Amino acid sequence: MKESLYKRIARELVQSIASGKYSPGSLLPSELELSEHYEVSRHTIREALRELAALELVSRRKGIGTLVIGKGDDNGHAHSLATLEDLLTLAKTNIRVVKKIDEIVADYELAKTIGCQPGSRWLHIASIREDSKKKDAPICWTDSYASTDYAKVRQLVRSDPFALISDLIEKHYGIKSEEVRQTITAIGVPPKMAKTLGVEPGSPALKIIRRYTDIAGNVFETTVSVHPAERYACSIVLKRQKG
Image (tube, rainbow, N blue to C red):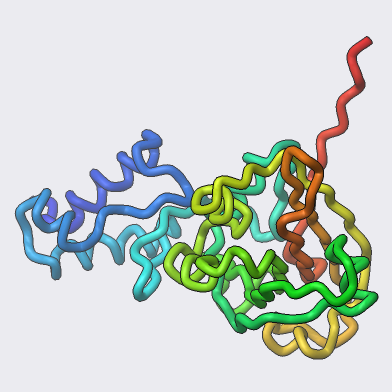
C-alpha cells in the first residue's frame, strides 16, 4: 500500500528531529515554509504536524509556531543546573505566558529579596511557564524584577516568549550575566497563585530566588519563582575544588 503524502512528510520530519536538525526547544519552519519546501498544500502539512503532535514530538502554539519537545517521563521536571547555559536550555523548552507588567516601588521586604535599596523603582513582570505537554499544569509562577532603564523588555518578553529576561537584557542592552546567585526554600503555594497553577493554596512548593549580577557584582535582574513540588526537581552538580 502506497504511503500517504502527509505520512511521508511526517516521517521525514521525525527523522530530522531524531538526527538533531531540529532540537528540543527549537521551532519547526512555519506551515508556509514547509508547504513550499515539500511543494504541497498547507492542509497536507497540518496533517503531518498532527502526526508529530500525536507522537508527542511537537507542541503547536497559536501565534508561536510548532515547538519541538522531547519525550520525558511523567515524574516532574528534572533539570541539571550547573551553568548559566543550563538555565537558557530550561527556558527554551517551556513557553512564558505574561500575566502582568507594571512598575513597582520596592518596600523593605521586597528590597531584601531583590538586593536593592528600599524606595527604588523596578519593572515587574508576572508570568507562568507552561508545560509543553500539560498546559493546565504550569511549571511555575515567576515574578521578575528588572531596572526601569530596560523599558524595551515590556515588548520583548511578549515577542520572544521562550528567552530568559536576563538574556533579553544582555542582547539589547549589552549587560552580561557574570553569575546567578540562587536561593531555594520550601514554602506553601500562596493563595494568589494557587488557582493559576492549578493546585490547592498552601500545597508544597519550591521557591527559587535568582539574582543575576554583572561583572561588577551589581544586580540587574531578580526572579522569584514558585514551583509546585510535584512538577519540578532541581539537580545541582557539586564539584570538588582542584588543589
